[in-house]
Image 1 (cartoon, rainbow, N blue to C red):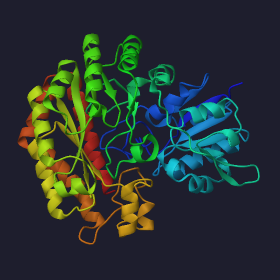
Image 2 (image 1 turned 30 degrees about the vertical axis):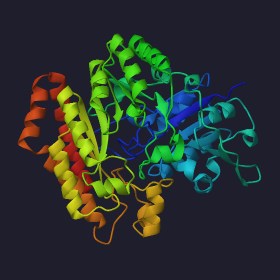
Image 3 (image 1 turned 60 degrees about the horizontal axis):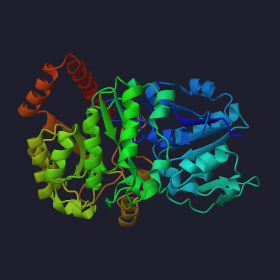
Image 4 (image 1 turned 135 degrees about the vertical axis):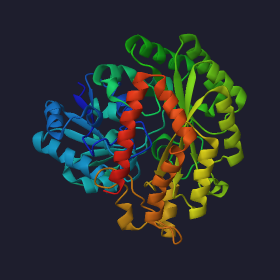
Length: 476
């Protein structure tokens, strides 16, 4: 008999989106929510389960407790910044429903399983490491915790037990469609991303990333560095399901860390999408050749989400990005030529950062001119190479480590260097945004976009208000 299971993204900071399919564990510049794909996948494998994604649905703690009535197992996705509030949610659930089994999943508990269990106290029965889809299925089916690979759990005598690692999933086609859970449990209009058409849907066509970027959380903690993929036919089948069941969807986003890593497969999927007449977007590394970009563009590709990180070659080398500034320039020019929109992401405060390299990155962003940008602060999450490096070098103190975000969920600068302090790095984010967006050409470009569509006009005006409010909150 399968346990009645609730998958929960708990209420947190207003607008916080730290445990979904995204890599950005903080409140964003504008109200944005990714789909909770990591929870939806195991939810799709457990009959009678429910996925409650509280933040985008504006579900309160009290309402969450009401929803949880009658469930025997609750799985909470947690993150480093939201851990304390997620544990408080677990405590409240345990107070109301003492017999409920509660487990935590996410990168935070995957790399610090014993510490997480200790810090969570008696409210949490187990934490799941590695890929946790089949782990949770086995627990829901009633397998004793002592026989489940990939977990740390608290035994009846209070002892913390570390079970063997769970093998990685090799047959990705064995996983059911997450979009079926979206259909059952979510209101897709609740999910916004500033650079994607609305409403959109995102899902993974594979897991893992071949790149070795020292700061990136998911490949170093849960997904691994091998890109394990679903077959092109399986991906196309899920897109067909989405077309049929979500006729309102205007864009599909493939949330794989680097969808373009396997170019022949990306081209095969693109050709299938082209036949379906789908508008789609994906993550990409700034090294995709023109010929591949052309195939993708001719078959419905609208936008690429590209992690440039920095305009300084030495910093890119320091973080093992595996990209040359010059090749990023050429790639971007190719995208402009083909009419592919780019949302570029940058990180300030990475190892090697100076006042001069920050200026260099700002000028680089202006020069290559992606349509929109996101500027983040270097965040050394536990489990990453960057975290270990920051601790060894003294760039991250214990006090700073405890503060990745402020009390409103806004990202702060935890790392500092002898020649570049917290405040200088923190302030540089605002400087970069202003210098990128407050240019005559960029203002004209966005105004032109707004004039073409009333919906886009309303959306950009709302985002503008949210952006100004976000900048104000950074100093609140």
